[in-house]
Image (cartoon, rainbow, N blue to C red; front, side, top):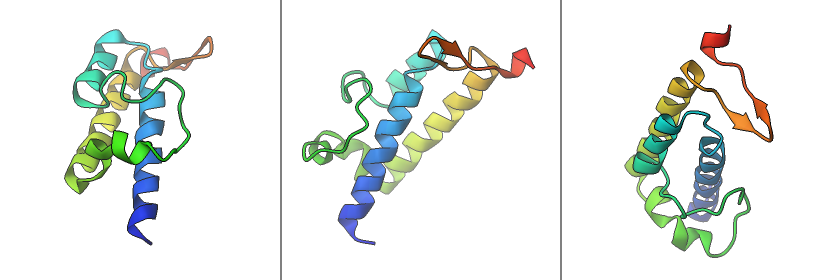
Length: 101
């Protein structure tokens, strides 16, 4: 796999995690994403397309393997908390949570 292809996959992952994190139905957990995940405003809400500008704009999230791994770890930790808390809220629909089972 070429280095370019790797960057495209990483950019897609960052954008997907950002979109999902924006659906967190618990403000305290979401603030953790803004603090340790993708900074507010780095990706326009709902933007899942990869463009020529993305490599430059998302460089700090994708270039270093450890930083990229840390971002995914942060996302997973927040999703685990989300599962136990407010769930995800998207398009007027609330997911179930561990507490609702």
